Image (cartoon, rainbow, N blue to C red; front, side, top):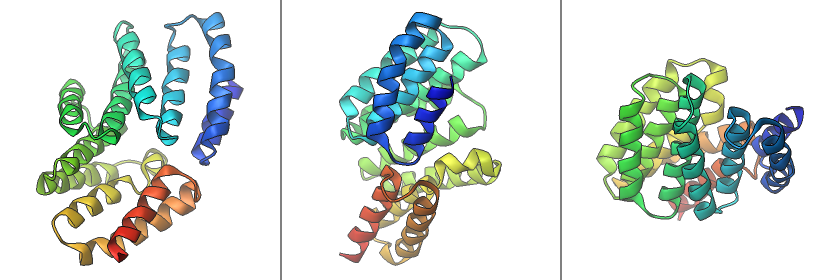
Length: 219
C-alpha cells in the first residue's frame, strides 16, 4: 500500500513516466494478493490510467478507464460507486483528448445524472462536460458549466480543491477565448498557470495546458 501511495505522489509531482513504471510493477502483486476485481486493485488501475492520460496515451487510458468502470459497476458499496464515477471521468477526459467531444458530452451527462451529489466527483464531471462543450464550439454553454463548477469548488475544503487547482479557470479561459473575450481571459490564464506551477511543478499536464493557453493568447 505504501508503494502505491508513493507512485501516486510521484505522478502528482509530474514525474509520470516514473509513476507508470511503479504502477506496472505493483499491479501483478495487487492482483495476486487482493484479486483482479478487488477495490484496491481497481483503484490502482484507475490511478495508473490517470498516469496514461498525463503521458498523452489517451486511447490506452480510455480502454483502461472503461474496463475499470465496468468492473466497479459489478461491485457493491459506496466506494465502488465512487470508483466507477472516477473511471467514467477518466474515460470522458480521454474521449475529449481524442477529439470525440459529442461522445464525451453524452457520457458526462449520464455520469452526472447517476451521481446527484455535490462533491469532488461532481466537480470533475462538470469540468469534463465543459471541456466537451468547448470542443464543440459551444462556448456559452461551456462557460456556464465552468461557472457551476467554480461555485461547487468554492464550497469545498482546501484539501478537496487542491487536486483540481487551475482546472476550473482553464475551462473558463478556453470558453472566453472561443467567445473572443481574450482581454478577460489573459489574467485568468496567468493566474491559473502560476497556481498550477506552484501546486504541481512545470512538467504537470495542467501547467503545460495553462502555458499553452497563455501562448495562444499572446500570439
